[in-house]
Amino acid sequence: MKKLLILLCIAGLSVLFPLSGEAQVGKMFPALVGETLDGTPITMPDKAKGKYTLIGMAHSSDAEQDLQTWMDPIYQKYIAKTGLLDAAEDVNVYFIPMFSGSSMPFYDKSKKQMKETTQKDLQSHVIFYKGEITTYKTVLSIEKKDTPYIFLLDATGKIVYTTSGNWTEAKMDQIDEKIQ
Image (cartoon, rainbow, N blue to C red; front, side):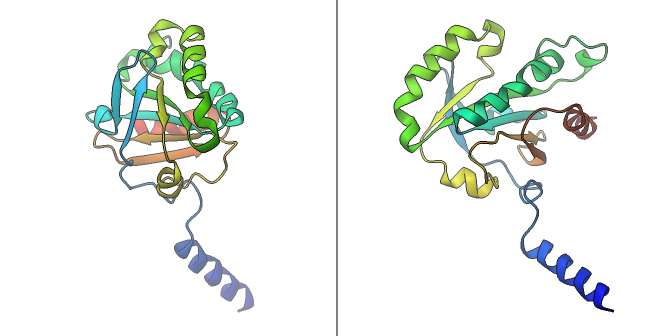
């Protein structure tokens, strides 16, 4: 009886305080206006509508380093389409470094440096954002500043999967399962 009561309490708390990552699944991705490395303005999720979209977000240099672990595997699969069955998957991909508060003075320098070091066919997939991030942290359950967050949107802009941290094959497999 005591174990049952504990399980019911845990179940009740999970309804009141959903686990991070699951809290935003089923919600629309919030509007975000930024610019690509070439200066083209872009609005998410409007730009993403019509097909699945994978978004990686980071709002600190530590998070950006971890986000880079996602770049090559995602590039190979969804942009370069180097795998045997990759050509069949039509997925938008965007990496979004976010600048707010004390990091705003580094926006232009970071953008210039990234443009110089990022290969041409990946540049249109990088969206620089500067402004307040409180809304995104709240709506998207972004809790850790030093962690990148990955969101998979369906064709309407609704979040269907989310994860955080470094790339792993298991996380990529879960993304693939949602797309297929």
